[in-house]
Length: 469
Ligand code: UD1
Ligand code: CA
Image (cartoon, rainbow, N blue to C red; front, top):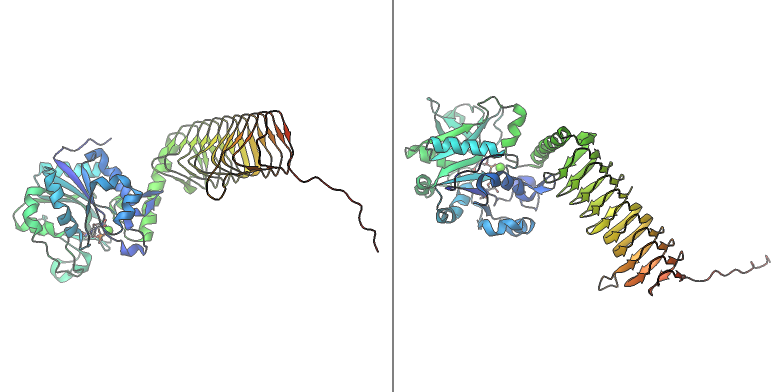
């Protein structure tokens, strides 16, 4: 657990850019890693340090971002035209000043893997050194398209020069030290420099990175906290690299996926084919739960001890209590399986599906806003929508609750110990009483009282075949 930063430090996430290199209509920060938007991950890194003391600069697709992450709405600043990272900071400046902060931790919104510990360390070093501008740097073999750190002969940071603007004759062969896009700025020192940012560069943008050279020229302390300096595992470099293109998103997601799966395996969750299992960061597992890859578990899914998710399942925001089973190829969202319940193979449990203790649904059964009572069964080819089904009831193959009249949804209520014969259509609203029996092939439009036998189908007619002529 990372300790919180002092109250005088606030945060700013730069997330207004389009992300042209993603070649997508969706704002880059909404692209997901393990089903959570990139921006959500960045916020997760900031929260333990700053609680809610941070703002997000939005611009391209701001409405979409606020819709997907409503919590951002109250703490966002708009950058109507995206004129660069320096301009994004300028847009947020009034808000930051009004918050009586001494320092602001600025994080690019496309750096979802950054560990809170690294942020915290940089802030503490910068505060101790009384730096006006500090930033995280990392040394790579190939500096790619990242901003390059230029140091003077004595090793002090002199500037950050963007790849496009880097002139080897002027700055020398690049060392591989790059800017991670994470900064601690002292507001009093940086305020007067903001107006000096220009856009006379290859991109025609106002760069936040120019603050480094400007602060240096103004005689302030400037600091690069190089995370590679302490012998970092080269595999961990990815934690600090901004995501600009689809392949980088996939690589970052894969890193996160592997970390999460390894962590749960270490906590005694049995994960078979672990390379093919995707577990979201909010999922909660219990030692003794079992997962077979390939499968995906997302959102606030929880698995208790003895819960088994077999291969090819997709599960989101679901609760699987002890000794529950999801057979292969099941698709489950916002459903609750009480202990001993089972679903699938090929089950579709939609929001509001509840399987009480020991109940089971089999192949090609779809449930939505429907509750299946204790030990009740719906074995095959069935749709249960807006339905309440009592304990020990058997729903025959091909049963459909006709819940929609074209305008509104209606409830089907079925009591306990009922037997619904195969291929029954229950036209809601309708109620079938306890212990009733509905004959196969019925279309039930009226309530069936308890203990009754309901037959609602055409009578079989037998005739002799026409004699052959
Ligand atoms: C930026 C840095 C570069 C660094 C790299 C690290 C600048 C000029 N360059 O480059 O030195 O190595 O990050 O990943 O800052 N954004 C806005 N408004 C804008 C433009 C961008 O909010 O007008 C946001 C984007 O949404 C993004 C972040 O700022 O989250 C960084 O922008 P991006 O275009 O990805 O910068 P890079 O070219 O990667
Ligand atoms: Ca970037």
